[in-house]
Image (cartoon, rainbow, N blue to C red; front, side):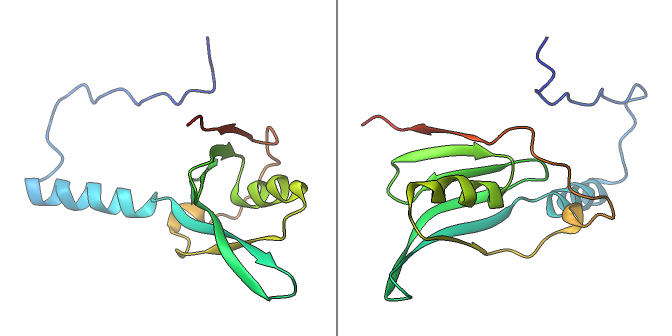
Length: 127
């Protein structure tokens, strides 16, 4: 059995609605806002701030990050955004991380961030 797949919670057994339709909608809206992924970009710097470009765009979830190159040449899943930069910079490029969104409540924790389970993996797209 593959333990890496998230398991959906069991539906409530009593089948009672959670509030009015408006209250339920607000509950789901708050849930989405609290757990929304953070957007980030990785930019490439040329020379000593001579020029630059957006190298890739990403979404950081609570337990991983998805990344896609701006030119659609690759996509990847990484343990987090910082690992994506570290791994992709091994090519010799000057890559930097910039956050577009502020962290939501889901990212605020008193617990230390666990070390990544893997270095990440990426896949080249075929044309």
